[in-house]
Image (cartoon, rainbow, N blue to C red; front, side):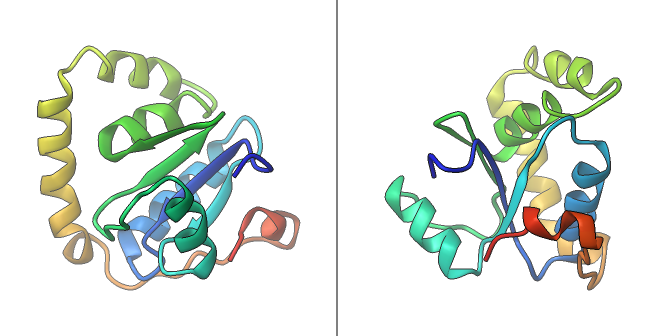
Amino acid sequence: MKKYERILFYDGDCGFCNSAVQFVLKRRKRDIYFVPLQSPMAHELLGEQNVEINLDTMYYWKKNMLFNRSSAAIAISQDLKGIYPLIGWLGKLIPICFRDKLYNYIATRRQKIRKGFCAIPKESEKYLFLQ
């Protein structure tokens, strides 16, 4: 994973997750690569970190550190434009047990929140999507 400084691993079959990818894509300050958890690349890269993939979990690789769940969301917020880094900083003030409880609540209902939706990148963004 050292080749890529920032990688967001997401459930490629989830409409809510694909919406989140579009959200990040539009607001990113720098290149963030996207890898669906179902892909061979995700299994290879996360396997190197001894991670057993859970489709209910978002993973974010940033500068040789792997974040998951709410910690991944906070780490991603630091790489977005606008007010999002401040929101992420404020999120760090909430104990991880509470943040992850909220994350898990949303993650178990994500398929109902947003039905099927496929992230289709613009031509200029296709290089950010890895398989």
